[in-house]
Length: 247
Length: 122
Image 1 (cartoon, chains in turn green, red):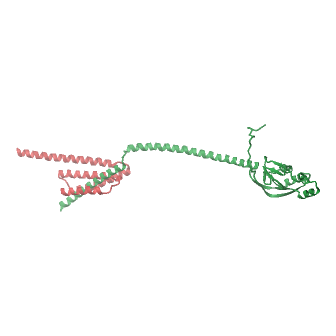
Image 2: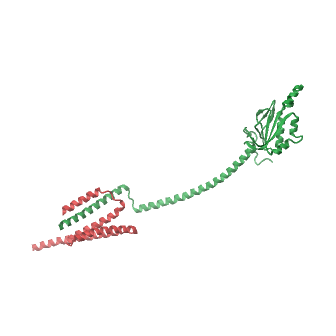
Image 3: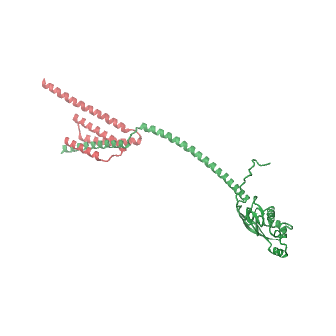
């Protein structure tokens, strides 16, 4: 039995070592075929150094680009301010030019032909319509007076009066901004309503003279008048800017 | 006895083939264990040749050397010292030593035999 035990132990040891060697060889073989190319340590070290160089270069590039980005951002915000200023200025100029609808306190003057007087005149037998109807000059005088009194925006029957607007007689009608219109004329003006009314109703002033021309005039002050924008497109064909301004 | 050895070797080969692959990180420890085992076996053979073989010393040496070698390798790993290399150097050194001992013993036996024959002839 002692021999038997000894044999068993030796057999077990043989089994163990063969088993270990086989497993080891198999593992090494498999691993190498898995990894495809086993690089030695020095190669790997070289590669690490190389990659570290790449990394440093990439980091430097990132920093550079980040700096550029912040620079751009800074200038972009600057641009924003400039753009905003320009936009504000543009809005202001547009309003001054009458290209946007505006509202505010002001007065509405209504001018109408006097039907009653006209009838009397016809009855009397010396009817001359030119005497009784509202003329373009009447309207222009009112507008002129309103401007002199500091009106900021003026419209006649919904047509904005701008620096380019005409008030012109075309026979029985009046042409304003290329639109034909007839009485009654509703002139709206934004400005200090008291001032406007006062300057119009001055003794011997514009209203007096219009009234004496047999025209019905009514003036009402309003807290809020809305005046529409100039509808036509402004386009200068012949005028160009003078560099530096004319002296 | 030879039958048992052959049979167990075959069994080991078979099992080694069908066992799943051990993780690559552990092959280092396995290798050290194998070297320790080889050292023990060569030592045992030399013991047999010198007629001072003791199964207890062999078996205890086989397992203890193997485990200590693996333990040292792990320790070296954690200390960043290549103790595995030192262990392999020692094992290979001992294997060569034992092999030379075996060779010398076998040669001595052969010479003894020749001398005996000569004496017989004389």
